[in-house]
Amino acid sequence: MKKIQDRKSLKKICGRLRAEGRSIVFTNGCFDILHAGHIRYLKQAKRLGDILIIGLNSDRSVSTIKPGRPVNSQKSRAEVLSALYMVDYVTVFNEKTPYNLIKSLKPDVLVKGGDWKKEDIIGSDIAKETYSLPYIKGFSTTEIIEKIIKSQICPKEK
Image (cartoon, rainbow, N blue to C red; front, side, top):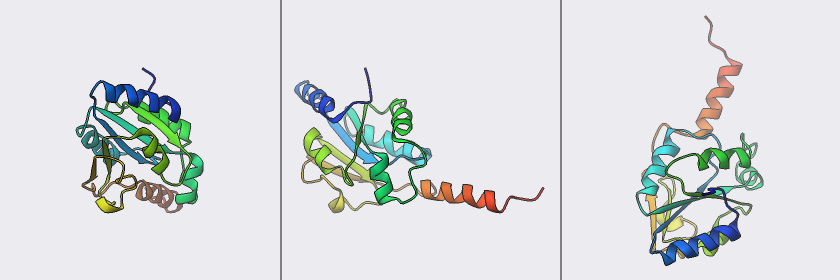
């Protein structure tokens, strides 16, 4: 099974999965530097259905919402995500939001992290169920990047 799929192929796959009675969970994000917060979040998301699909922001999409990013290319980020056991499919989208992708795939369940209010989650008008999972404190890609930069500017004395 090839986990990284284009939108058109994934739409067909979703149709087959729905016909089999499988529940499709969708989440999206940049997943620039994968950390334990991401892993915990994806495990929780997977428990909400049978199939977990990640809509991955393209490099262009990330750069419009997070200037100076991504650190890792979309190809690299997709490969890392596809290696995770809880992830069934990954697809890249270029738009600023995943609305058109969600509209195309029609997932049963839509999931975002707790930094999103349920009513603000894009695509919640399409999915049957929408969840804002609890935010996991202490894990942030931005904080990781800031820590790396700070350690390079002010290295600890030995």
